[in-house]
Amino acid sequence: DTEVTQTPKHLVMGMTNKKSLKCEQHMGHRAMYWYKQKAKKPPELMFVYSYEKLSINESVPSRFSPECPNSSLLNLHLHALQPEDSALYLCASSSRRSEQFFGPGTRLTVL
Amino acid sequence: DQQVKQNSPSLSVQEGRISILNCDYTNSMFDYFLWYKKYPAEGPTFLISISSIKDKNEDGRFTVFLNKSAKHLSLHIVPSQPGDSAVYFCAAEGNTDKLIFGTGTRLQVFP
Image (tube, rainbow over all chains, first blue to last red; front, top):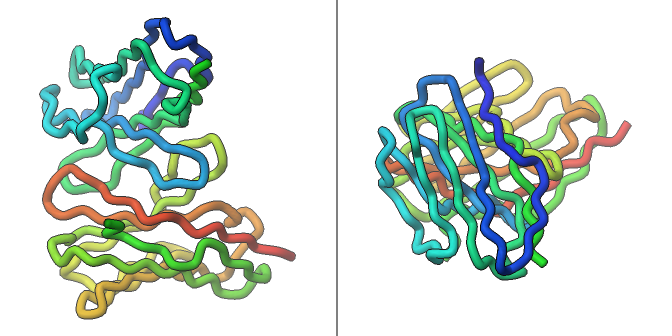
């Protein structure tokens, strides 16, 4: 299995909702990542988990809360988001010092 | 401060000809470079990478060249095919888990 899966594919939520994005990989990769991508912009790193521990938080607002339940799963919990948080959220995984494999992304719309 | 730059937002090439995509970086600590291809509403797909100890890496139709003194890398696609039409991102890493993406170049290959 050489892919990263993400669910849901699309998500529409109100500013008072709580939702979660899920990511899964079965490649035995030790690092997992969340990125945010706005239209016509490059992916922007949000969080990095290394060996299931949060190693990088790029000063992301607390309304985004990551969680790594085990080495194959990565969640992003969303609460009280703003319309400007609407974007494509990408998950990726990698072994040490190698290419990151990306999932297809979740298209998030905040109303 | 944009540490990785792709100065050409778009490139149009005839099928069968060579496509050359360029990327410049400013941080001399970067030692691993990658190229990704991205279709709209999908995750980036890894194409090819190069370590700073090399100046060239080839994989099929794709070749990446690295000029460390100029802090410049390029991706050559020969021959170009219509299916190569996408946005191409270069990315750089410097012994951390942080991948810094360039701004992207939209390649269009026409018949």
